[in-house]
Length: 306
Ligand SMILES: C[S@@+](CC[C@H](N)C(=O)[O-])C[C@H]1O[C@@H](n2cnc3c(N)ncnc32)[C@H](O)[C@@H]1O
Image 1 (cartoon, rainbow, N blue to C red):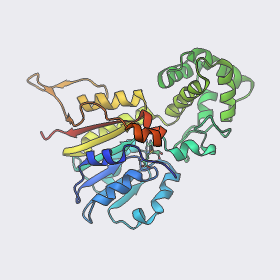
Image 2: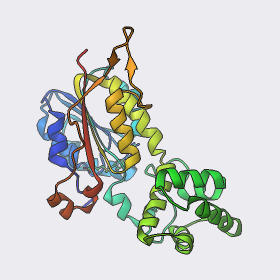
Image 3: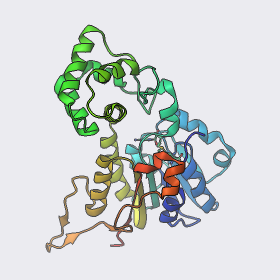
């Protein structure tokens, strides 16, 4: 299976789909969420599905997508949401709901040659968009020790980030990084705490940097607010604390800085109403069946009517 969708029914219920409405799925992946959205749409409805991974695009060849006139695939980074939806004929403020199920798919993690996982020895790539951009090996081979330390510490919460950054620079001076195995070997010499947890943190940090995940999420959230109609819903599934904090603060304030704005009279303005006051998590049953659901947090906000 390409990817087992997480919190599937709950996230689709939260969209409150109107059969003739316009919706975006920013992270198509294996199409699990998209398929269920389409089941709710009639011939006047629209679903715009984004994915930057050409492998995910292959899933759109299934008849349920390719033969449904409501379905439109956009092979793009979701950070261009507004520009892409506008070129599809959608106006600012016209979308009824926007969904994002962030991070990587099980397919990406489990396909050795994509280089996302320390479980396999493969090229150190980690790009979701395999057609463009620097690979993880480029990051390790070209960033300064300070920049490496910073990304390991901020994105991966790696406790000995400086030691690892310096070890990476020393290693690349002898021989540049090429494979996941090269990185696993360095980590094996200096990890602290649990080895697997340490490797997960290091690989996550690099993946976030390679794909500029925080930058893309900020652009996406800002575009979403503009593209949603009053009463339209933003539904986001996050998998780690950095993206979750960003989404939570955005939904509270309407900006990526997370700062409350005031109007001319000094009243606090809130572009969203929170539909869920607290993030919803997967049930014990779902987590047992799909360990990836363990870290999932579902956050939902509705654009204010004013
Ligand atoms: C967790 S999976 C989505 C799974 C999907 N909901 C399903 O049911 O199969 C995330 C997907 O989003 C894509 N993705 C992540 N960040 C993206 C971005 N900035 N722009 C476009 N696609 C992105 C990944 O390539 C991946 O296929």
